[in-house]
Image 1 (tube, rainbow, N blue to C red):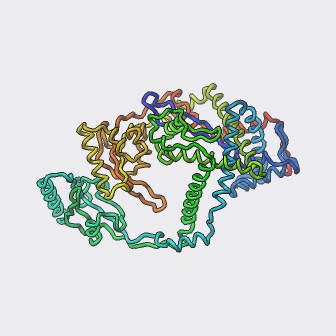
Image 2 (cartoon, one colour):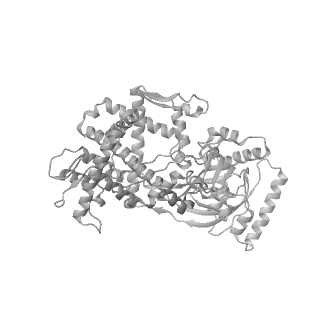
Image 3 (spheres, one colour):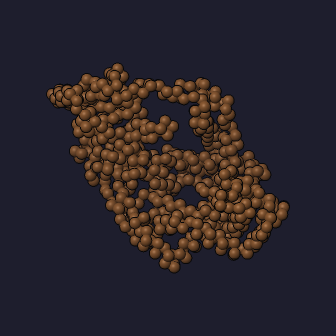
Length: 593
């Protein structure tokens, strides 16, 4: 979120389109009040002593208000830009405060009724939950240099890498139940291929042409490996190769391999200074997770709340109104969890699965309950936080309404239609794929090829018609889509590849509708180690493809609004700000700011 108050932004949340209504998204339009809603809310709740710098129909701005607001800005925003004078910049901040007062006053009227009361209550409970989180978790974390150094010394082996190898292979798959004659023929084929390689043939080219592995598309490259990740019999062979050396034909339960050791990577060590900040983040994450877990269990018991996360496994058959969490007058129903799952996009749903979303919501409510029980709302500092949160809610809803009014006027005047006519290709619907998957996580199998063989068997049964792929997903898949038979809904392939890795995406893009892939290696990017991990395998079937389409203005209305704001942000800010200042008859001191 950028640092200037009257920053207009539209955030569009689009659920995966359904076949019946591929472009009827659920939209939430937010006019973000950056820095700050917090900074502006603070100024609005301050006492009013000091020299008056500005007056309006909705209040005054004093020098104390201005200085307090500036101190709440990020450090790099507490001074004028290169093209601004100090006087002009401070005048701009006074205008921001006046606009916040105007929005807060308008928000007060917009929050009338049950919906408004609920919004204010949510803001209040959120402030209470954050106050309790600060005391019970944030303040309990020891992230001092001494603690970080102590952890480093106790876990020094974790910082750096032991020796690694970069390995490639060519693979000939042979089912474990194949006849001896078939295995013999496959071995003979690989022996012939090995002779060709030793005669000078290009390894990468032959891997692309002849390998049955998903690594064929990467010229046979498996990647960087630590000791101990391969089967013992394979491990001994490949780690004793010289750089560039080919192995003999190696038999495994799933077929035959020819390995090439591409490179040996010497061990590395990360110093304390290099690891310090990364380690501090690790300690913070570990400590926060531990303390949150302890607080969650303790408060759940203390409050006597109803909590039934096990119902999520039966979500297709449970009555939608059934509560999965209930505490006092607060309730989360099965329908609420289902609504989240349907609204969230493909990536969002995997970053925050329904069970995690539920736990997060429950934790927030438990924290607020405990804060009320302990009388946090009577503490001056927390009472101030609550007041600022309520004011922020008013500012937010009024800012949102201001933007909607502005865009409605532009639409009525034909300006948005003209904008669409010029930029219609920017708001066309992307190509979408309806995808079904079955996944097998490596961590539930003793050997990696057991996961591969499970999926290979499922693929063969699906292709033969003896197994419905949806049923195979319900029975065997580790993905969160398993209860829906592995149906991911309508997905963009770039989002699909972002989650499951580039190798999967490269194969899936070549699948025909109705075709079942071979087991594909899932790759998950590990930001800490700056490389992909391999957590499992997956089968993919493309159920349907919806080509990119040019949408009419009405179909693309939400995206047209969003694109217009993106392209005309500064003009919208200036016009709306000027009109608000005029509407409240703002008067600002000419000098002495």
